[in-house]
Length: 364
Length: 127
Image 1 (cartoon, rainbow over the protein chains, first blue to last red):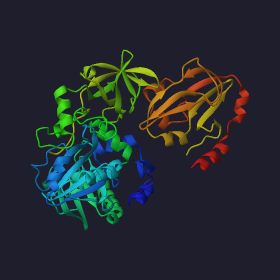
Image 2 (image 1 turned 45 degrees about the vertical axis):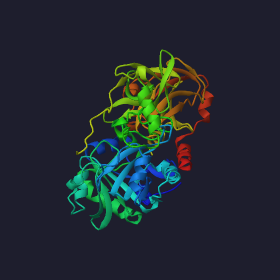
Image 3 (image 1 turned 135 degrees about the vertical axis):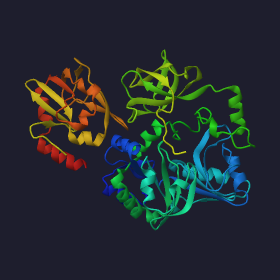
Image 4 (image 1 turned 90 degrees about the vertical axis):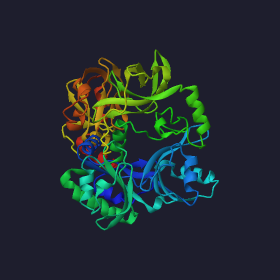
């Protein structure tokens, strides 16, 4: 298994290390529920150094990215970040990613850890305009500091006024008590917070320092188990579950990030057709009515007939219910529709509800 | 890890407390710690006949569902309904919160279970 620079830090903190798609990372330290609740009430620190980073530079950088992603990057300013799916010609998803703009000729893409090599190859294979594409993943460690206390904690380590880093914006070269880092107000929890990109060799000491200054505010190290329950409650998609090669961004409810009126991009034709024909299935939220926990890939039936499948399901620690996200045939997608989740070969009652499952606390 | 000297133990990290012809079965401190936060318990079916080694219930943690295996053969005569509403009690008090009571059909099976000292060694080897 691959290790991040923070492996020893996790071991010292008692992290339960598991295999995360080839990476040795902690699923939890004290416990998933305790860590999850701590992020919503105070703050949590995550090691997400396994994520991939790819730079796209040169005079054709903007044109190149614009043709590969579904969102419209033409209006972006320096220091801004956009979220976008990136699609195959048939409208299926290659990955979802964040696009950080340094300038018209300099972009920093942040991609899912499990898709880094695939995405890099996809960009190379589709580079018809001579953009300079470099996989810089090994040059960055990445930490996520999330929760209502995140800003006040990080502010202790810098003279930069963090209030000036707005939601989905970043500053490069921030001095964090002697450590240089790129700091963005982004995250994957539904809470306010920051993602910090720094030199891997700086990561171990910085991690310890941040935990130390944040201790008085209730900062705790948080593992990938809680990272999943947090993003799930906020109904944020996970590649391989809510979106995939077989699930289009329109089906996943990400139409806001698919700009069908911009110039041609890979997948545009298929997505235009899908929209015009009307979706046959879509992503919904649901809650269990009878006892049981829904999980990824469990079948969903109505009157004994399969009508969809669970994409993510779990006990939701803040909402305190067993909830799920699912792709279901369109006629069963209305709120209050009764559906059966097949758990260990038995149908268990559930019903479609609105998503997200709680209000996000972004500082916009 | 807490291990109680008066109990017997299975290789699947269950504890067994024998009272006459009945065996109360639960999961050990080692098991609850390995599982993490327990959020759901599917209890064995009352009056069901089970053989040693059969799965007779499910414990779900946040991340996964795990079968509970019966360490002995017999009939399920009692199930602890409290766990249906408060599954987290298995994390908090694993030795107080039994899962089911089984009327033994073959008391000789108890000889195949570990005592506290053997279980302690077994856990050390698993780590």
